[in-house]
Length: 372
Image (cartoon, rainbow, N blue to C red):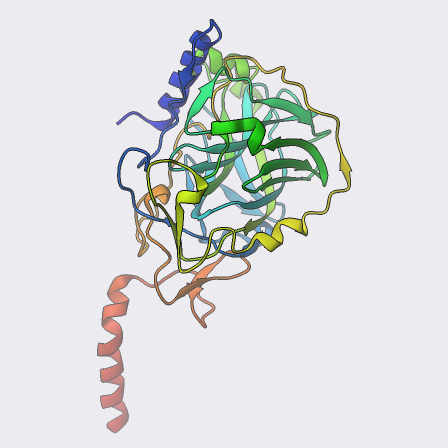
């Protein structure tokens, strides 16, 4: 199987061809693309959560590509050597919604900090920070993996983003996407403007850091990341303090009703698409920035985080890749803090299935002991 990282390198290479006048399709990897085959339903968030990573990790996010570390500042994603690409990926999906992350981006030429919303059919919304530029954030979107001429990206103002915690927000509805920096709307894209490239299918949330400037990457990727990366000047760390995520839909899971990739075809099990649409107005806009510049290199790759773009939850009742997860098991709930726990319990991790089988036996033993 070709790794997600190699797919991304292939995308960058194809982009060089695109700059000569062709139209290329992104090679971003997905475990199962519902445009071409029947796929498992996506587990839904169906609510809002506020995750404080200064208190440690939560089991609604799983790590891959490296080991994120936790302390009083939050969760750190550190690139120290070639191949490091630590990230967290949500076990849930949102169907329209708001993702708000408070973070410091990683410094270092060639180092990339990423916040990515991505669906199984390769709809995508990105915010990415280049370690060589502490004053801007790149915003981007893709529909169905079609990168076209790589002209959807913008650089938008995000001053001093490596030295201080900044809150970044992606607010996504059927009609528009708005990107915010500390409450300032820096970019708006409407569905009408984007046409058939508008992202509109259930999205998983991922964030982390990686080395786009690694010499092993395709030349187009290294160029975009303003590399090459000099690892002797590292390690380089992105730090996320908190994440507030609201799903504008409700239900247990989202599935594709057909192969159109249109939001109207998405079905909710036990809820409704746009059932939480009233939360759209909760974002407080303090200012609106000037339009960003479309000055990106035509070789910019599609979003995603280099290496390990899927997350495996080994040992969980819904084991498998995050993009092929089953819904959260019956009897378990998501807390407002982003923890998946048994209903009415403060437990953080589901028990091993073997313990569930032993439960009735142990209760019987206890009853015998009491009779003695």
